[in-house]
Image 1 (cartoon, rainbow over the protein chains, first blue to last red):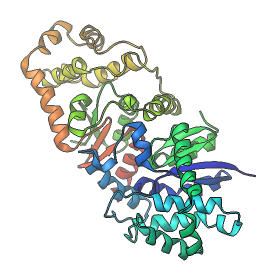
Image 2: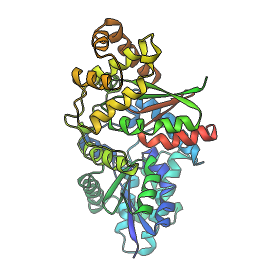
Image 3: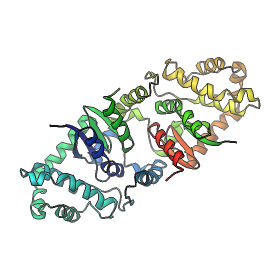
Image 4: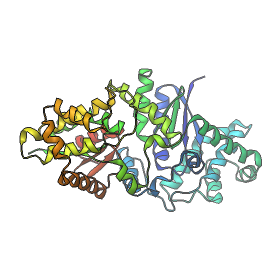
Length: 204
Length: 204
């Protein structure tokens, strides 16, 4: 069984999206399996005392410019979404439902669903805060729309997401994306190369 | 006359220090001259709504870990200072005084002074918020201690620093280090490689 690369992200985070398009290649290079951890920055920020990036004067303007520039550097499709940011509860609960399934043919839809959801928001401009958009995305990657709609309403799935966010905070996660390899944490899309160097060298 | 690479930094910023040890090599590679712009993050944060990095729960712990890890990667000497952060008014005004001099033999002490001040704080553990430490550092790089002590007390030097900080904010600077090349702004020590790629490729 290969080692893991834990990838914490909020579906509403542009840097989370950008990193999601490149993290698997890095993991694969080092024979690691990406474990997707959707989190809700709104809950995290209550603990960390932060606010959405684009809400800060000066820093927000830079961020908007930098999202697009970072995307262009790697030729990643990117359209600044509107509304932005949005609440990613529906999409994140869907990930929990996929993970909780006892059907391996559902579990293996997680990665396609993550990519399709990011693409829907950051490329196609669809509002992924809406439950019906998330259901449509899920259906398109081969999930049972009706079973999902029923599943995400269950308390166990709501609890699963809440627990995941709490565990992330306990681990020290405060932003998106956050990558953890062997208990070493790296924050930011702009740290992907450093993660690669860390794994190549065995750390320093 | 070569083009410039504007480097905005707070002497109290670890990432500012770390970047200061590597930015000249990148500038030189692209035939650019580093222009040092000391700023005061305390004034910037009043506009941008931020607080010192290490004051944020979770993010602060990560930062302390990351300062040292970032230093180790490039074998840069680093000792987490205490007290931290500090006010860098004395050191920053000294830069303004050096720049304001009509003596080229004073002007050319700016770069050595910047490096010596960072080293005093981040390697030698000296409290550079104290005027007497800054005077000692200045003297060691060949500046006239008495002339400096008199100079930094002048209103014109105080105004120069205030103006520099205001101009940085007007330009959109919100953190340390910030690098600007040809009106393109990059924030963060972890963006030095991106600046290098930008200058190599001519942008994207």
